[in-house]
Length: 611
Image 1 (cartoon, rainbow, N blue to C red):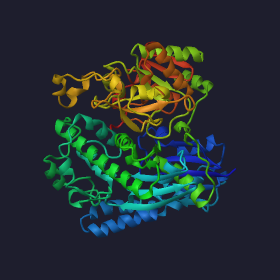
Image 2: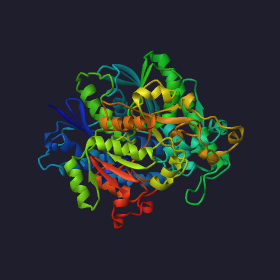
Image 3: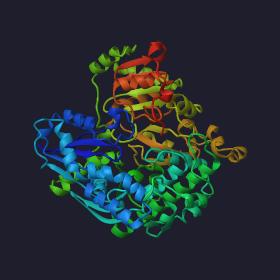
């Protein structure tokens, strides 16, 4: 049996994965082990996990592959400096020492790090390098359920490419077209993330969540920043940006165009201006993605679309592409960002370089994205005892019954079951759950549990068979990467008075029978749940439906703002004790907050660096 270890590292969201004979065995992000969000360092813990899970020593692994080519990235840095000289000298001089010391000679760096896992690992001859966007494209196509697809990837920047189109058929995948740095849809979106005062490479979700509170009145001004062609290709006017040469995303010319300086997140509240800016850049992003999708459908005449890269995590834009009915089928890699590059690099090596055949699966090959660590009932109980937790162990039927009862009574529940998810979304393995029928649940979870902005939306998890009864959606969305409107039969129309409200004032209006997961524009980021990939979660939602008539529950990631999703039972207990969660369910153990030792309570409001 042949094995491949895939690694992504050194930029953001380091991760590792392992394949055995082309099958995805395990994958995880380093942040989950170190508790440092978006940890970019060498993924020592993630590598240890995937090796242990696959029951392999590093010296037994056949090939090791890194997700991009450092020499090409270095070439881009040098050429960018030459093109913009002398303007970019300061940022260039800051980057150079690290490149010369570490990044340029990455094979040697990797070899030295890898040796620390296994003293019998003697040679670097089995280390290979993929290309950044090929890794993204491979992560999207090879695990997909399609034998043939056109693959669109978009992010900030890889080596040179920022957007690519590839065509996949069987075990072949070839990149056909590229847009190169500094012209980048990902960096354009990140520039506005920075401008609104959110953290780049982290706060883009917030920008997307804020957009429905605004009006897209700055659309025309944004279009002065870039030239968009009919086929969706684009060029950014670098006079307005600072990311190619400086240490910020935007500059004074950008500020003057929109009439304000970037928001200072420490002392400046989010105003209607920021909401309107968010709405405007979201709309332009959607327009570009739709134009690109239409053009590649027309050119290649292939009915299936796969998406990856950071921009593919923009589930609102994905939902718009779906609604346009450009393609018959769409599949999006759940770990669409750089973490998924580790998986794509390994799959590219297995199928493209080694020519191994590929079998497609009618669902997909991601196993629901439940590819991380899991804990036996015995391990859970030992760990909970060791940290002083007060818990009761009950049988499966009682566990499902009691948890659904707590949810139906408006309690906030931490839910920790099975293997951890790979990718940024909690999908019912490391989740915080609530009752979607409550019109106070969204605000309470945001302010009392997540310690984050009250405008941030929550996702509905719904039984697959009930999907179209509750949402305007007729395709599965297992990875929470598509946004759809709430079914008109479940909507509560706003009064004329309510329609006049602006911005955050809209938050407290009850819009549907499931207000906790209905965004201000009547949309929701939907996760469809089936029995095959997560039986426990499916059974819980089914029991909740039996009690309430509602086949939907609120699902948000099990963490607080700035914290990675919990990985271990101890992580889960710490988060439970540092927030206003009412119950924690780990394996067959149930923990009631009222029965815990108050000395174990934690102050989570200052525990993690805010995003």
